[in-house]
Image 1: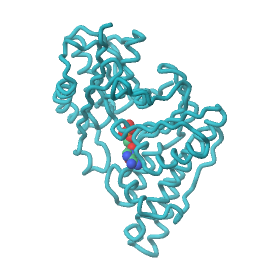
Image 2 (image 1 turned 30 degrees about the horizontal axis):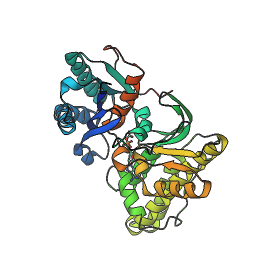
Image 3 (image 1 turned 180 degrees about the vertical axis):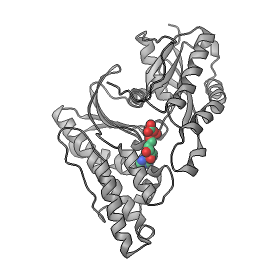
Image 4 (image 1 turned 120 degrees about the horizontal axis):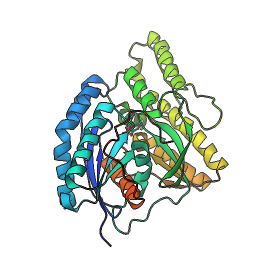
Length: 341
Ligand code: KG4
């Protein structure tokens, strides 16, 4: 049978990434991150799209070279159509369309969130078989999303719980900003938390029915508590940053795991995966391990390189869509805010 070789392109936020997958096996995954945003404490959309424009050609070129694949060998091009920053998406979408037209090969649109979940199916070698079996639950936690997804098949997913306000990563990033730490806050909080006492402080936890999340109350409670403590000690953060980080991380992880546990119990599912940028968090990974032992879960925690935005996840989703002949036309525009449903 002829090889199916997919080029994936991801440009939804501040990472320009291209990957090549042959018959489901990853050959290359090249990502250029954008340091330009650090000085602003967050992603500046206009700067992000300009950086994508500069990065996209060399990144795609590198991905093909590292894969040892010629453009003419590609079966199709998969690209992130959304959700994400519209200016950033435009760069990847336009590039993918132009390249597919020039090579006269099919174009495949990918939902970024579906990509995060299907990253669990990227094979790193022919005999790599550590993948979830359907159906399973996936906790999708990133800077923009906190969802519990019931995954029935590659192309059949249902969001059964989601945040009604802030995402988990967003809450961590904002609390980190309030503490005057750098951007993005997630990895900094993670590092500090390893040296702190997670029981030192208590912050508000939501009380929502069902599987939905809320993180805005935690963010407000963190800010108000900090203001109070700083009245007595203006250097409170400096003196207690490890304990603050550990307590914040524990609160977020507790909130995430409580609903996930309930969903797993109600749906009688023991295969549980985690995906998205926040899945790099050590506290969350440890909690998954604990639940695996305590509740006999079979857990799927992605490699660090597949947690943050990368084109490998777009290419693998494109591969499954290619098998379904699920191609898209050239007139499909990028979208910034459409959910997976
Ligand atoms: O999935 P992602 O790369 O981007 C999108 O939102 O699409 O997720 C980024 C989020 C940020 O909020 C970042 O602070 C968080 O993931 N993050 C972490 C860690 N690494 C990244 N949060 C907690 N601990 C980490 N180690």
